[in-house]
Image (cartoon, rainbow, N blue to C red; front, side, top):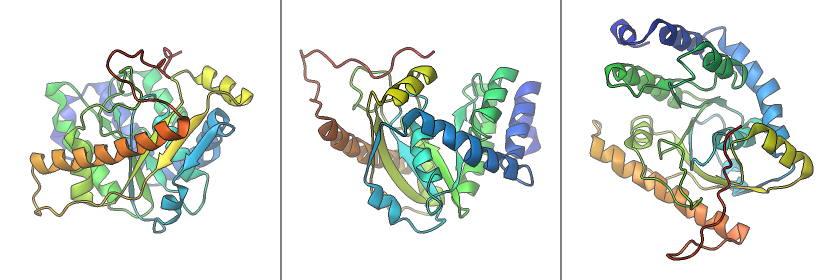
Length: 283
């Protein structure tokens, strides 16, 4: 998949990592990754949240057509956000889909430890990668085509953060500006775009495990109805993608206000002291 010349811009280990992860997402090897996601990763995520996660808007998930491809879009405060939201789908057979979480190539595709975590900790779901270096941008078109193919295939789900990067601002309900990528995926593949907002996790695996065992630090997740996508010309432009991404971000922000009310937290105003960030330093 993709023009062979695109791979020439990558280092040898990046090429190896990309092809290894791609093999876990297609062909016979994909069954291994799928088994690992269902049998190992899903129970592991459950150990982090099953005693303290409250889910709202589940009726929107129940109404999704069986096997319809889904673009799951959410806020991004911690490394675990999409994994927990994906866990909600994975634990119910009628919602279960093959999950992929696109990731920045930094670390995960640049060395053995990153690749090991991609395989063992995610069952191959952290794929495809996107590259930040200007000389490697050609590979991003390859990754985009992989995502579009997945989003046109029944039984697939892509987890995506429209903000593009983790939000480290003081207000956990504020969203960074939407990047056009989410809008491009939505408009070109036109899957079901399911918005969600989640709050209460940190970045520390052991801290989250301990909190779940003690039933502390409640986690709240709200799912919304699928986003009604605007009609666009067959050949979409960057401006279309950005407007659609803004629309998606707006829907996520509205769910964030629901979470704020459910958790009984006040809006941060000028001159007031912000609440403590839910994200302690990663361990």
